[in-house]
Length: 192
Image 1 (cartoon, rainbow, N blue to C red):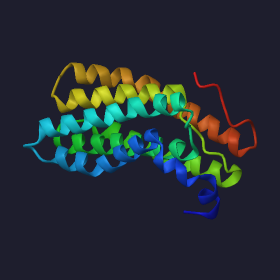
Image 2 (image 1 turned 135 degrees about the vertical axis):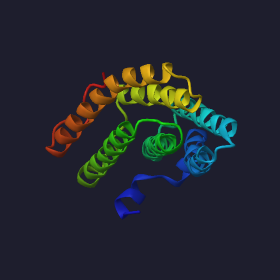
Image 3 (image 1 turned 180 degrees about the vertical axis):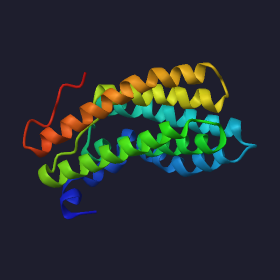
Image 4 (image 1 turned 90 degrees about the vertical axis):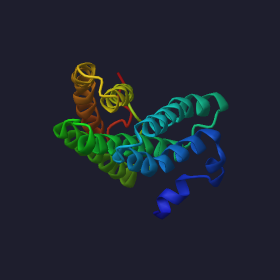
């Protein structure tokens, strides 16, 4: 961790309940992917993903309600989301016929988002936050992945098609946001 990053976090932030939920979700990534890759553990994988979803739904509102929105939370929440969704998509592409082209696009988009955020942080010491269409994409993608896990066709494919709309929009908006940030423009674009 760079000196800049260490200075951005107050150690007390690790004790915030919302950040603990994000850290739990981060810790669940490996076990969730491992469970998905085992053919005999579909229900356990579903339970882990559902638990991960609950922590994701709870951490942001909890942080805002308690007045504990933190730089650490702004960092670990989206990383936990991306690692969980990317890992689940990868496992489902291997085991459940989730389209590889979507997994590859998802991995590329999330790598670009993380790289852009890192570049902005290095230049400005500002931790960028998720935009609304990115949060919508995360929610729809989670439902889509659950439908693929449950082998719920044709609904899984239909939900995937719907998800690709905000997915594409988020890619463009994140790219625009990072380019503007790196050029020194205002860091916060409208989030809708």
